[in-house]
Amino acid sequence: MGQGGAVRAILPEGQDQLLEPGMLEVERSRQRAGVRVALHSDSPWDIQRLNQEAAKAMAAGRRAGIPVEREAALRWITANPAWILGVDARVGTLEPGKDADLVVWSGDPFSVYARAEQVYIEGNRVFDRANPGPPRSDFELGSRGAK
Image (tube, rainbow, N blue to C red; front, top):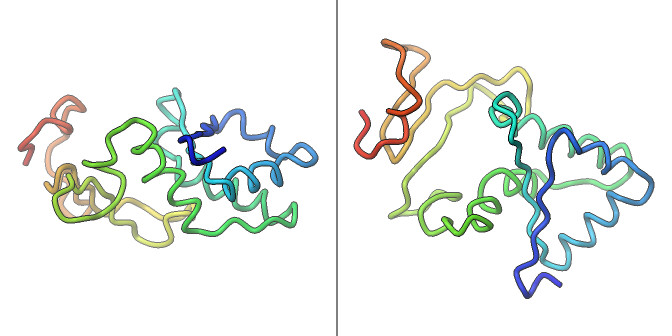
């Protein structure tokens, strides 16, 4: 199933379906078969907290007796969505030559207590909690060469 590039996208607001009997084991079987799982959202609020949604899914797995590895959960919100969208040559992992879009967290990125300390887009620091500067437009953040 996974060899053909199968994917499974999960909306955070539909995540409760994973708690139905047997569904977490089905998801785990899909991952073992090579299906790439990604969390996504159309909500302007949930999209900002996919790290917390991944943490909730990990906790649900533990409660069901199916541990989810942190590395797998991280791929749900980084490398897998980039691959699904066909932009993994540019983003999704930290490698030489890629855009270097990343967040530096104050602690565990899967914790509700962690705060974004710095944000980099295309290798440029666009937010620094220690020196926030003037507010920036969302339209400026993704533009090439933003400083």
